[in-house]
Image 1 (tube, rainbow, N blue to C red):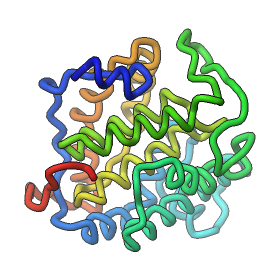
Image 2: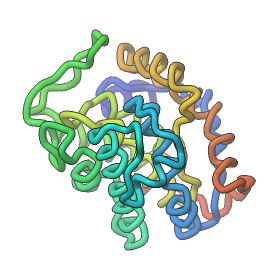
Image 3: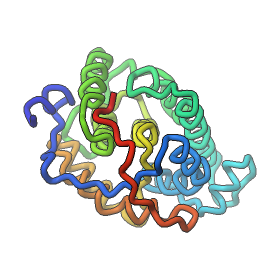
Image 4: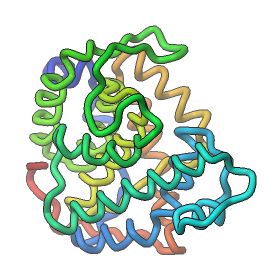
Amino acid sequence: MITAMKENLNGMFWDEGKMALPIPHAGTTENAVRIFRENIPVITWHFMAVFEQIPATLPQTEALLKGRAADGISDEQAAQIRHYGDGAARLAALLQDGAFALNQDTASALHELVGKEDALTWGAFRTSDLFINGVGYVPPRFSELSAIARKGFSFLTGLSEPKTAAIAAFLFMARSQFFHDANKRAASLMMNGLLMRYGYYPITTPQEDAEEFHGRLTAFYETGDAVGMMEFFARTVENVVSSYEGRAPERQESGRPASCR
């Protein structure tokens, strides 16, 4: 299986026997989307602090998502927060309409919002090669990206465990660097889209664990071994989802599909 992972996921792999992701089930896609909508400010606050080091408080994030100003937050940072909120709203609408899919078109549609005016281009795969600062690993050539996406998304769609497939989708997209910028932002929405499609709670990356997140992500970029990042999510997601609106996570596992198709 590891050989198949590497062949289909741009060199990425993990040991399935070590994975146990305590992401609770919300019962239905509709319930999961409702929880997501109610907690977009919390999810955005954590992701933008970890991904972009934006020093906004939760009240400031809530204000910015409502179109108000926030003292001490630059115009660029405010735009990044608002655009992530726009992408989250688009994701919720796609799920509500049954239109979410793990593919290039959906990823690009979400990136069109989260990468707006921030990436060199937004809403389309990058058109030039790039490097990742501080990392020896070199992402794929831009001319190979569509083929890599088709192969990788198809492989992930066929996995039997949606939770693992969702985390793997985030990591696959982040390491492949499909876009000029805002890759992790777009990947996080795709990850949560897949989770919610199968009725699982949306997740985020706790900002207090940002240093560990980036350290493990760097190691993953260099080696393609996703176990460290999978372990990070397994350790952090339960506390995050239980904090949504003070809600204790449910332990339902009903309705889990046989595959991620």
